[in-house]
Amino acid sequence: GLVAWVQFIGKIVADLFFESIFHGNNQFHGIRGWTLCALLVCMLVAELYLMSEIMRIFDAVLIIPIYNSLQILSTIALSGVYWDNFLAWSVRDSLLFTMGLLLIFSGIGAVSHGQKHQSMAHHADDKRHYIIGAKQNTDGGATRSKIP
Image (cartoon, rainbow, N blue to C red):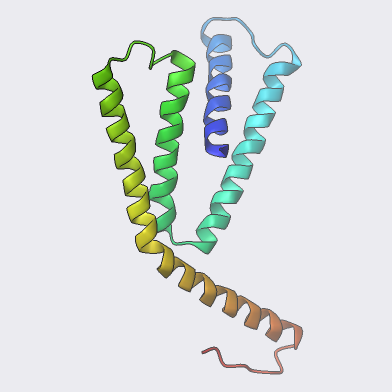
């Protein structure tokens, strides 16, 4: 969701800058252009925050391929909507596209299934260490508990 919206609004803002700089048609004379820029910045910050939270919980080996695959899918969808790329497709093109989507989804499934259990075990260990560390800080460090 958020990745697709960031790409879509990023494309619009890039077009605004391109039109303003290279064609001399200032798109930032009103509030609309600046509102889109502010919205894009807020969405990018939110995306970075969510990505850092996900990376804190799960391994990068799990997250990065899934994130990149979903980014590719949203780019494909954006190109279909923004430039009408799917308008003149034949049956062969549609079948090959569907096969490509199936490969992407099967790759996401394979990576996530293989890494999910290991990532969740690491998350449980990290959470236990965090709770024990917080408890030691509130006790003033007087009690020493052993971490199994």
